[in-house]
Every structure is written in C-alpha cells, then in structure tokens.
Length: 187
Image (tube, rainbow, N blue to C red; front, top):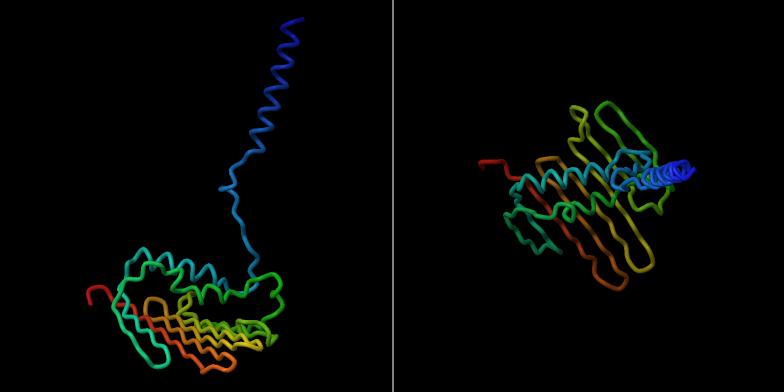
C-alpha cells in the first residue's frame, strides 16, 4: 500500500512539474509580427541601418542650417539615429490601414494620405530588380505653433537627402538640409 501511494504521488508530482515546465516557454522565442498594410518602410530602413553599420562605409556628409554649410567625411556609427526620420515615416499602423491610397505599376509604388492630418503625406518607391532603387517621402505637420515639412530621399548605396523646414509662429523660418553621399570602396 505504501509503495502504491508513493507511486501515485510521484506520478502526480511529475505531471505537475511537466505542466509547469511546459508553461515556462522562453519569451525570446516568440516573435511579434505586426500587420502590414503597405510597404514595410520601418523594417526596410532598420535593415539598412544594420547593414550600413556593419559595413563601416565612409560618407561625405554635408549639413546646413539656413545656408550655413558644414561638410565632413565620416563613418557613421549610429545609422538607426541617422535614418530615424525615414524609420518614423512608417505608415503600417492598424488605425491607418484605410488611410492611404496605393497606386502602383511594375516599377513604382506610391502611397498618398487620404486625410490632411496624417503626418506622412506620401511615399513613392521606385522599384528595380524587385527592390527599392529610390524612396521619396513627404511628411507635413502643422498646428497653431509650428509647421514642419520634411522631404526625405534615399538611394540605396548612393545617397540620402533630408530637407526639413520649420516655421514657428512669430519666428523666422528654419531650413535644415542634410546630404550623405556614400563613398565607393577604394575611392
């Protein structure tokens, strides 16, 4: 009798432990996939940031504010920050799934905002060999204090351009311009 009860309790304990261990799966293995309604701009530029960071590519970068220009030849360490305006122009949010009109041909995909209050007004992708060869983005935000207009252009492995215009109420307009030209290896 003693052995029978010990065996039953052992089986119950073993099943309980198996149940506990089965419920303790690693969260790292779970992947979160967000719904995609449009081109996955965020993942594309995050991938570009990772690729460019590992390549240590030299960039001829010029930055200007109201025509005051500074030029440098640099290796950019934090491409995620450098491409943040592109990454933050992502339009794949559930609330916006019906907010953009898509127009596409074999070599071009365009998205245009249906509503004037959406920050990202347009995204145009030129496609070559099933990959983006040029991405152009227009962002616009306006409230009673400030108006921001951003024009973003990205040519993979060639150049990226950012033009940002800010108009604050009672202040002069500020124009920022960034151009980064990728240097070819050995040249």
